[in-house]
Amino acid sequence: QVQLQESGPGLVKPSETLSLTCTVSGGSISSYYWSWIRQPAGKGLEWIGRIYTSGSTNYNPSLKSRVTMSVDTSKNQFSLKLSSVTAADTAVYYCARVAFGFFYFDYWGQGTLVTVSS
Amino acid sequence: QPVLTQPPSASASLGASVTLTCTLSSGYSNYKVDWYQQRPGKGPRFVMRVGTGGIVGSKGDGIPDRFSVLGSGLNRYLTIKNIQEEDESDYHCGADHGSGSFWVFGGGTKLTVL
Image (cartoon, rainbow over all chains, first blue to last red; front, side, top):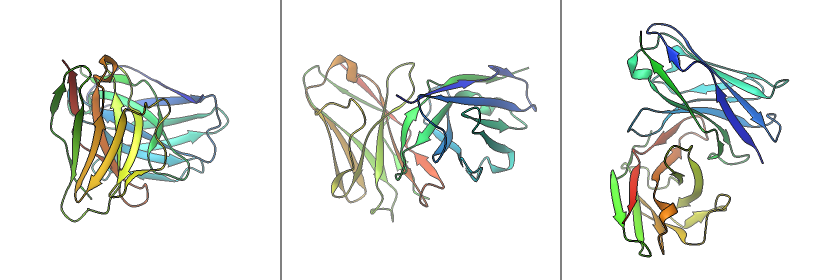
């Protein structure tokens, strides 16, 4: 059974960079698309971006200027960096796998809360 | 890209049925929509995909037969029959735009089991 686990600081100061890592276990990270999705408290889901194991990326245009994703196949991990954060970036951040051959998210992490505050 | 609209809340009594609606914005009637269940404090879980012809592909792992979908025009429906306490969740609809290069989600519907 594939499992995803987000990790990273739970508190980030305004204007700094948010950094999260998703560790994949129970399966290989190779040959899949992987995504980051976030959810502010009491609100809906917002797709941040996706990365393929080759390193190719697509980002949400509303966040594109601040987002960088990377993948480390040797560690079965992929990562998110979001720069110049503000309070509006406070949310639960999820990592998820895109189902092979389809475009839905078949496995999700449990999520990690990131709060932007001084 | 499409906009997905969901009512913020719904409720149903234990053992009853409920239908949740996700409405696509005009011009996107051919889009498929994915339903996700999110129990309190948990990550979302894929339920199934729906197009105008009904379910597309298979249900997510462990999704009971009580869950079904239909699609008509701009609306995509998720029906839950014989509602159980464990069905009390937030239900999100989502759609990919551009062969997976961009995704959008609705605002989610909070289902309360009475």
